[in-house]
Length: 335
Image (cartoon, rainbow, N blue to C red; front, side, top):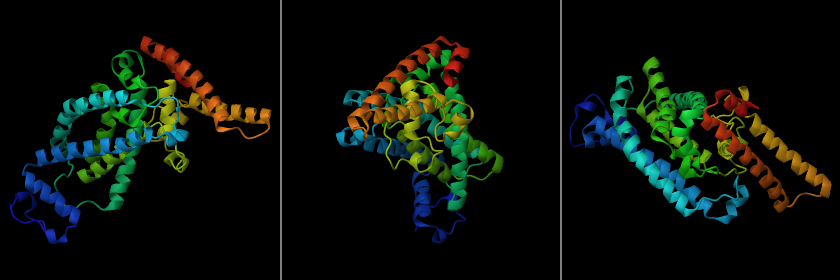
């Protein structure tokens, strides 16, 4: 039960009817005393804990040879120096770019009609439906904006930084130019704000749930690992690391974040699908030639050969993008 310091924020609330989490939520806002500061602090701490908390397991996995059997590009394991370089830039952008935006979010959210300090929370069904919608909105925004960032000056001056690592790893999810963080982040924040403006019904706890899941998705998509239990093997529309890793390796195709259907509908996954098909065909041909199942070394050799070819094509695609030839760039994406 919340006791002690009184506050006008909860004058009409019966705390005995609240859940434990709702009481702690109210206690936090009462303790801080300023809703803007309380939301800003909670948002930033949550972001850092979730982002780096999700990255740490992937760093451990990268250090253990046992997991190489599921590494999408097993010949490219991030070094400690690369991870430290990535961490430094990510922390810099978190404190200089994202922190000010996070502290500005509360007044912006309130202006759009979002509930922040209020209790009780919405029911789980309402939250689940809203989060599902936010995934769809963000995926569509990211699909369009990401392709734009692969063209000419936008690529050279903004997106090229994120493509430094052709074999991404978890920490690299937010290794990006400040403008890229702002542009792509609009899909993450803009969707909920638009929904709130149109419906007048959204609580920031739903926003936090969405942000946590979106951070997990982003880090996992950059992990570089595809396990038998990875979500896309259960839910085929999900993108996952297997989908996004090709984008970094070949510099083309697979521009969406969470789902695969937009890339499929608009033909921006044709090179990816051709690549997967060719791997299967080459392995089948090799099995037929030796008349037995391929050893892991033989299978890995086939994949390594085709990876090298895809990377060579990716270098050419990157050169086209940097020159700013839109027609050639579009052709390289879809042919």
